[in-house]
Image (cartoon, rainbow, N blue to C red):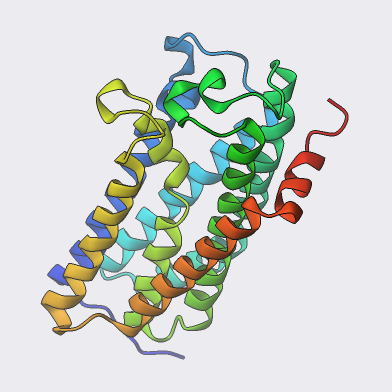
Length: 259
């Protein structure tokens, strides 16, 4: 039986604070469309989107609980809940795919066509491209995010005995799926819309915080952090290329069949 212990330290506080920040982003981003939708003028929400919202919320709450358990020097309970979280990650991926792939048919049912210019659909989303080009990019980037999440979570579980690697991969797995919540925050007028720089700047700021933590504590960037960033970047590059390709566009177009 493992005798590994995790004494309370300021290092654990960093990961606890980071988990809090990610959860607050999710709560704030989805508040108008999910948690507090009764207080806003919102169209009806499809049932599977409630599931997606519940899965995502549950994941970030679980992450916070796990960070709090380590900070409270309760590694045994942390490990026991870890197995449930690994399985729960499958639901996060399923919910994310349902939301991303279902977006196309939902938008088309609202009167959009693949040839509609994106500025006609929503000026905040950009300009100069068709809805098909826009949504194809979004669908494939979402797939890349979910694949990144699955890979990083799997690696974190596999390397759970290496606590320095495990905790970084867990945070980075959560970071790569916070994009939808940031996109909804970007819709607030003072953030400039989803077509503006807010989402990318926020992601870079969150990543920079972890890089700075590595540098201040290790005087270098941890190998796990660097490897995760490379995987995430390569998957995003591939997703952008596929989304603009004939194959990617054809796949996205097929999601609207039956509309």
